[in-house]
Amino acid sequence: MSSGFFITGTDTEVGKTRISVGLIEVLKQQGHRVAAMKPVASGCEQTATGLQNEDALALQAAASVRSPYSQLNPYAFAPAIAPHIAALQDGVEINLTNLVTHYQQIAETADVVVVEGAGGWLVPLNRQQTIADLAIALNLPVILVVAIRLGCINHALLTAESVRRSGLTLAGWVANNLTVDPQQENIIAAISERIDAPCLGVVPRLADKSSAADYLMAPVC
Image (cartoon, rainbow, N blue to C red; front, side, top):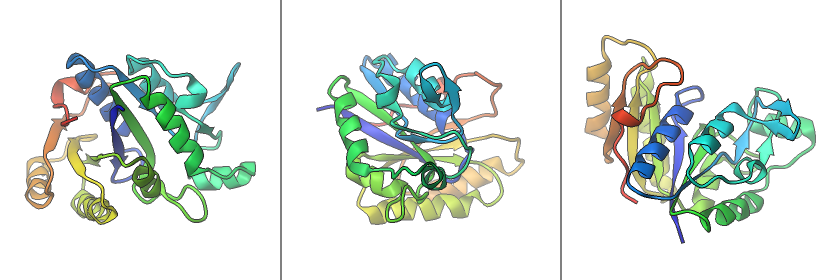
């Protein structure tokens, strides 16, 4: 059975995909066969083969084990809105058992699976369950992506505490600089002092399509 990591963030638009792709590249450099999964995605575009998500396609392209798109991203929705709302509008219920089955099929083909969540840790998937419940069902260690900006210390600590209470391991966190913040070093130091997990990298503000891999260390598989 392969190992894996669940990538979550302090919010939406914090750079989870860039960090996930970077971690995939680092794990490949270590010789691992790496697969990826984006269980739920909104903001998808219609293609000849159905709805597809830009972030999911980036994960698929980065992985050394290429899973079929329908397996990598089982739930794809067109509106760029919260997944559970998009699902309700489409008359679809996001089913965790189905997602776990897809994950297990992917995991059979790889050494490591990088699973990227949607939005933040407690984003709803349906009326009863959240992204956190999916991570728990997959029983994967969690990597937290923190966008370094005003307010992120609180968001990072709340998310780390919620991960801890879930019973899962916080395998590490990544400081992702989406803007130039003069308090960057102080913010990162404050989070490092308060989160009992390694910082896997401090990623500077990067140009579009630039890789984060050079700024990341691999989590322990």
